[in-house]
Image (cartoon, rainbow, N blue to C red; front, side):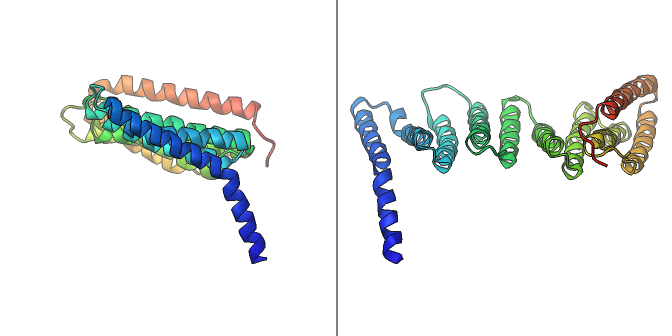
Amino acid sequence: MTQGKENKKHTRMIQYAPVFGIVMIVSGLLLLLDQRIQTTWLSISIPVVISLILIMAGLVIKKLRWTVSGLIMLGLSGFLFVMLLKSISLVSNDRLAIGFAINAFVWLLIFLNYLFMRRTKAWWSLFIVAICSGLAITFFIPDRGILDFILYISVPLGFVFLFWGIYKKSLGLIIPGSLIATMAIGVYMGWSSSPKPEGLQETGTMLVWFALGWMMIVVLSRVVTKRFIWWPLIPGGIMLMVGSGLYIGGNPGNTLGFLSNTGSIGLILFGIYLILLKFGMNNRD
């Protein structure tokens, strides 16, 4: 039994030996060429080339773990390549943004590889896509702050939860998706636009957005069940009343505009609920 396992392992090593041989040959050639023409970027591109070879080998032999390993290595080596490449005149923030954008694209390719090679949806990879995309957007912003990181990372994460929950018809995924997205927007909208925050108006805006998240749970619950999910209206209604009172108390001159905007959003949500009520996405009880 032991000898059979060893023979199988030896056969597998012989089967994959050409791939490692190509990796070594290409790496050696790039090092020799870089010493000859002194470009410096050829040396730091070696991990990128190795990752591309692993990806191509995985596609040829139809081994998902090879392709995924190559893609992960491509993201990390691409990030390193952008950060170390001195021939491109970019500030460090732009380099970070490009590096995170590369990784977001790579992890999206990992999701697609699982989808087409195994007919499964690797939702966990989309969380990394969301985080890397948010970081890329944030680092592209010149005058960014902590609120920008909160907004551009949390909102994509919330939408991943929402898409996953709608696809799986799971209220347990829709709830965190709705709350994470709207809470991040509420914090950003409440505290980023006021040069001299006084507290009442900002806190009121934040709480109204929090309430919107709870209302979204009621609306999107139609994806999961035919029954009316009423309990999110309790925390949502409390936050809406408290937030509205704080906003009006902090900025009474804009009461009409605030009520108009809040009413418009309420009409939109109620309209979406009616559409889902008629064309429900499932027939669960």
